[in-house]
Length: 387
Image (tube, rainbow, N blue to C red; front, side, top):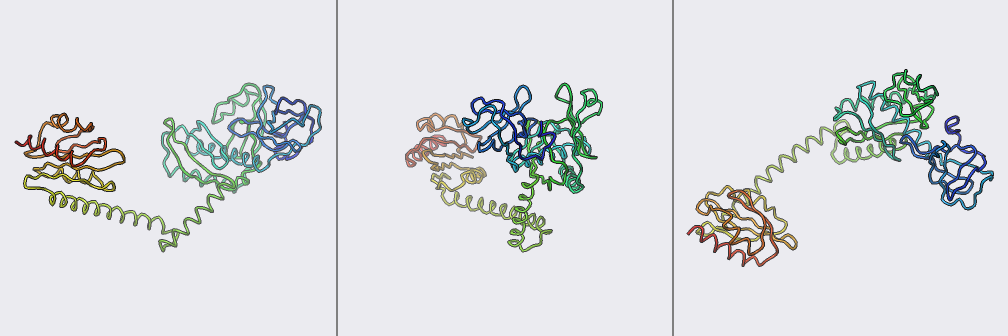
């Protein structure tokens, strides 16, 4: 398998051994078949496009082509790799070994699963949470090992000898085992294809995390993707510094200060909004402390509810259009306090209104109706409650 013995070979002359539909096999191959989380190779057989590579039961590579109608067994062909795709896969796979190895040696954190995509790499760990300080330490150490250009090598050995190495992860295959070693960093059983030295990874950046199956999943970019990410982040940082009139080292403090200021202003705005709405309710009350009115769809009816709930003696009915529905708010306190089920059957049921609440505030929705009719029924029902 020349993708193991000569992983940097980009072209190869060989002979076609079989053609089954659009699936082609050759006497020798440089095309790596999908496996171990690494994508299968792409490229060309002569002028025929190879879309993917899968592994046959006998271990050979099956080249899945776009159209193999022009190829037949016995043909002498030129295999050409999509080298950009292959090298990206090699870089990402090596970066994954580097990160997983360091997670284990630095913090005793194991790797449960990995996913290698075109633009990112994910590592699902065996931890529920990982402190940000450990992630920072991991990335810093990984990039130091990249600059040290650690050699990446392979060795085949018996299953028994491989087991005796005390690898960080159990061996998933029977028979001879292929061991991949990153010099002074990691050693693991793996059937993938990797770069020859860590310097080819160029850069690793951490981009985020999430919880999955009770584990912490970490997201990274590596290689060209990491470089592009760093350049993009730099542009954003410079733009923010220009807008905020600060230096790069001051940007975090500046944003935190602005965030705190915004929080204070939001709190003040909320306070003023409640004061204004309290005045609005008072201004609408009649001599019996009763008010019925509509508010616009843009208004926040929850503010009205909070303010109205503080009145000691009040009968309030507010309606708000929401598309083909109406939101209703009813507040009954003091002399208007009652068993709300009474209103539910006499006032709400005829309008097919749904909802409820806890005294003195009740809220819900109903089909669109004539507001004046509903207000009239509300005044009638509430008047009967007060007697």
